[in-house]
Image (cartoon, helix red, strand yellow):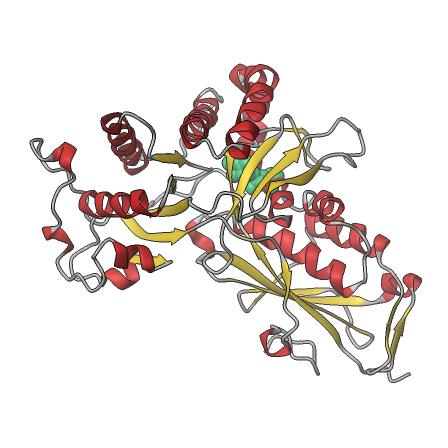
Length: 417
Ligand code: DP6
């Protein structure tokens, strides 16, 4: 058998946003949570990670590149994922390439990993969730691991908790589990992305100068100091999870929005209840909440839900396209870009929403008419407080990309292209 072969697999994995939050671990190493959580997977066309993994007898060590730059794989979270996947690798034969790898051989073969996000990593949009999910999924394909997505999610979980939910599309539940070894702490799909396809998601990437406390550190401090976290995990979340599952199953937007907003607010209340307190939201985040709350109240029933993770970005979920169009108009009225910014680079992702709003090609965003409820109030405008908006929707889970031209590693050298 020739010894200079390179075998690759490329996958694409979505990011996800929790509507019932994961905040707090009962086991730091295995990454076991103190409560169940539920998320919606975001459309990978707008937000995803693409990862190519490769093995070759010529590789001297495990190596990884993120957005083209070499990064270390020595962290325990990477090591745990690599070990768990290698331990489950199967026999593999590629007659065309003259490659035969037996189960036991995988331990000795080094891997190369190249990963790329189609959105700015610095924007604070759960890049670690998509990243670890993609690494685990791509390695599982490469190494012929015969396990279902839930089993793989329990491996991705050991990279980053929220990553386990990115193994599925649609709405996903991370079941906290009871076992000490964490084998039952895994993700399950509640419904796929077609079940509730009216929903439109608009993300406001909020400008921020400060570096936020990482989720890992923040939740550790909350577990150690917040009594509200204990109450939330034991009393509130178990009931909320059941109500959220019902709301999703019945496409009951009013209930879905009420639970989503309440849970985001409670997560941020837990952060405030932490000592020293953690502030993830800023003035812009609070203004977006007020704007949505006010509109929902004027309409008499929820039109839009909001949720915020460990940073100031707002994720807004509109009940349908018509509402999303009005939402975008409102957002652009209150949060216009800095002067001379092209609307085409200020609203990215699914541009058809911009078109529906009749704003495609608009030069003078400043001249937008105020939404009805602010007509008689002083117009509040905050140019530059939002960096940009991303329009998207619920999306599908991981996919294997068989087109070799999409590989991020050179099939001959196994190095980044
Ligand atoms: C606020 O999954 O990033 O986004 O498990 O320590 O890697 P680690 O934390 P991470 O935490 C995500 C927290 C959150 C809520 C959520 O996604 O459920």
